[in-house]
Image (cartoon, rainbow, N blue to C red; front, side, top):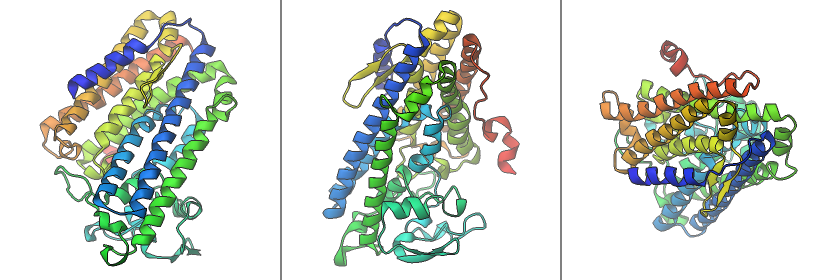
Length: 419
């Protein structure tokens, strides 16, 4: 897989074209790539929906395997969109509906006894909506006889203003397809049986019909959310219009997304924190053991935002005038430095991805005392932090407004993590 990673990077580099250093052209490329990425995310979510409906209509081990494969495939384009967060308010405000994590899975369905119950932080951590057609939420009687997208989005998601009450999006669906990963630091994902969706006497763990309702509703909601976001990047979409309303602010938005995802979000909250806590529950895709892919495609998304190039799920290339060219015109040394560091990050994350695919699971890497795992994770963390410093130099070279990137206690104040 190392050679595939190197090949992917090289192929993508070759598709990055040379255009005049024009801010409007750079923003146009950025918006076109956003639309392509969200459109691909929508297409793969629709394929996931088809697989889910097949599982619900005719449950089998094969149907569950196919639905899981469709979920993993859907993460490839979506993770590459995350570079559009932070700088674009319309994306950042929406993102929590589709990719919020970590979640208290007991809100949704049955959990292992080791999970526990309600906590001081979350009264509804073990609500189990699937098992309860009616319940009280924040003092209000909720009729959940039919589990619908409106119920998930309107009543359950972030219920009682608790962020871990995640009722919608990729990770709710992930939990419903895999179940809890009870392997600790050992390799292995969740092992939900296909019979959790079987009807009649074959049903395991009760409420199979309602579990299917929940999975269907969550997947339909994911599709509709991605339809909406794809439209926002169309010719007259709100995100595109906002981007072009002030070209300087638009360039700042690009750099903000790159720097904040690189530093506080990915290097800090998604990677360094889990390693500090040695906690496999801090994985981004913790039920499916797909975290190595999510990290890699986040990094590739940052690379593509700078180089103005994206290779879609069907192999088509969307490319144009790039931020790299804009920086090179202002300070060639900064562009060379940042380009090299972005390449190094993709390679570092590629090494982590390759190791996981060869059997060295991300869970194993997080175990205390696992020096090889720590080296792989910290290789990614250090590369992301290093590229952020060069992104700051690019901000200065372009003389755009001062930008404050998202931070993380795990990087900025490590002692606070354990308080």
